[in-house]
Length: 275
Image: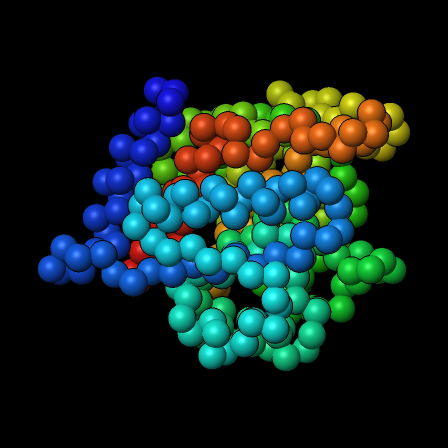
């Protein structure tokens, strides 16, 4: 175990004290991960490792983690048993599922989303046909483009005093990822607090082969929260895969970078702590 990861565990265990009762007994805190795991091998790879990682973190820090690929469980009765909802890849499509999630969030529920959970592009199999989620809740609007191949990036902390960024250095390395950019300028949305963005030292970001898949400049938020809700979105969640060699072997892990993992753990405790 690395020195950085040991320090992450020590620091986060201290935070655990905020999620106990007056009798010093753990509260019944439960998180649920929703996933589809059908659309892209890189996303499927992430979903499988994320389910294992969150289960391990739950055992380590005293919360229960469940996962389901049945989006019909996204209903008021089912969600009432969970403190935190995680979208590991896609989003709900049925109107009743969307309505239940919106109600859950407006009533104080907590949410963590990764990578493809924010994707929307019209026309595509995932059109932007849910204004509350993409424009109000996430604030990002439609997907515009991405980098390729999946590569590491240096991230810059934009809001140092936020709980998700606690005890992180000013810049840190993120695991290989396909990085998205968005239709809306998040920096101009007063409800959005950008927590981390691509640092300029990352440029050029991506290797192509298409030139528009390589970013040479610009401002790209990759972690943010909407202050109207208890939520955090992470652009991470697309592993590097051996498509070209036709082996489809996993070439990277989203949970391979200690400081990025600390950010995820910080987010868990920020979202799960009593308010």
